[in-house]
Length: 300
Image 1 (cartoon, rainbow, N blue to C red):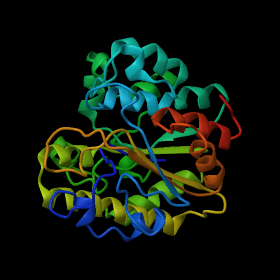
Image 2 (image 1 turned 90 degrees about the vertical axis):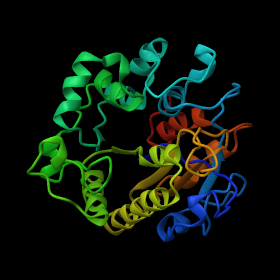
Image 3 (image 1 turned 30 degrees about the vertical axis):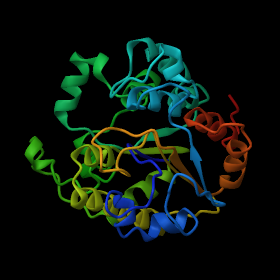
Image 4 (image 1 turned 135 degrees about the horizontal axis):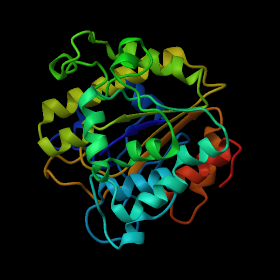
């Protein structure tokens, strides 16, 4: 599962939408020959409501809780909230996150992001400021990977090519190409039943409103996809790509958007997953975890 923070489907206007400017052959191919525009669906892609029926702009804390638990977190607390998990949602995340549900069933899961040493110091002091994904793993007992895992090809960097790790005090970390990072994820998928990679740079690029940066962020992800596709067997593996809210698709504003987000699924079980979600009256972020568990043979 590839989680893209801040990627919605909006009008493919090259003046404000980097998805219309970037070279994204892998993503377009997986999406059925086109890119998310907020309306189009294909046999491999549908659009999910990210507003969760609540006024205001969707945020990462509530959006990711909905995505990874199936619970309408914005409705639960009465508003959108982010970027970290709201304190009222910590119990929901601990009990109902995808990682917790897999752990209770003895299923091997991997959060493939590597975290620098300073993150672990921060997490020990400021657990209330953790993101949904990291909080989910800590509650489920899923190990968070570190610099040693990154150096030995057991994790990848949040920026994909590990450009900033030496500045963080990890001088032994070498730069890695997106294709090489994709190969790492492909190898991990043969060892674990579920692998998650979180790419939060699209949200950051959207807030920056820099078209060149946004295009570069998206094209780096597409190169990662090519590396993954070279290393996995789609007759045995499900590849899932989705997001939590819109942002990067509209650089005319530095805020999030209320656009729907894409859900792209290819490979083993993809048809069943998309059919399950597509049959719902209103497919939303809350639809993903229940459908994924069903495909994995572990209905909620």
